[in-house]
Image (cartoon, rainbow, N blue to C red; front, side, top):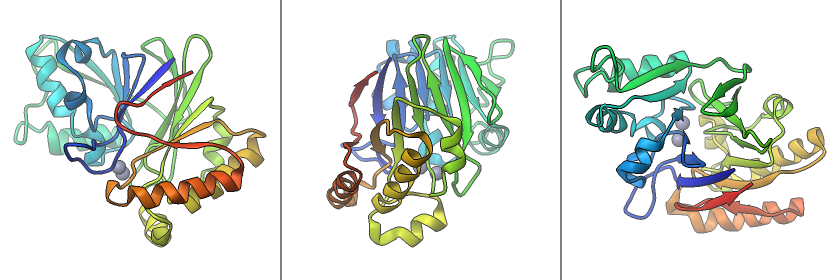
Length: 256
Ligand SMILES: [Zn+2]
Ligand SMILES: [Zn+2]
């Protein structure tokens, strides 16, 4: 299994992209940087896109990929929860902001939306995909993706602290977890459903207590304006845990 980080941040610029992951070139998770990071042939190789929640930085390329698949006369499978489907229909693919590619063209729409349920594993594009509830400002799921060879990656998406129940359901080799803000924003992070390095440390301590091990850890969704400071605080958390934590970046590839 090869995981590529297409977008590793929470805001976009020439040098940073919104969150998007790609597994083996065929399965994407979140659509913050799908079209801007991938040439057309690579887009057409996508078998499915898993969406974690409806926030704009995670779904922004859905209309764009819809248009690209429409013009290629192809269909892309999107998976997520009912609230995400409703938000896309109401706000992005509503025939006002952009065409409703879930119905266009008739008979063979460019986007086929598939609803997932938390806690129920499904076979998607040759992987076993388990959606797990996390703690964010809107209903949000993380995904554990297991390859045919048994390798497992879990991506938390946006989440605040209190992940014990989530940890109980997964056993990843690689954990891709959000760390949005500096420790001085702990209160903001708790209120808005995000993590700081200090909160990450607590969650990883819980993980190790509950599971008896720590997976490889890569952080994403960092605020690039504070990234230097966030890195220093993550390094301190890693020292406290006596483990290694890497900050994700655009173009990073992780082999499992
Ligand atoms: Zn969010
Ligand atoms: Zn986000």
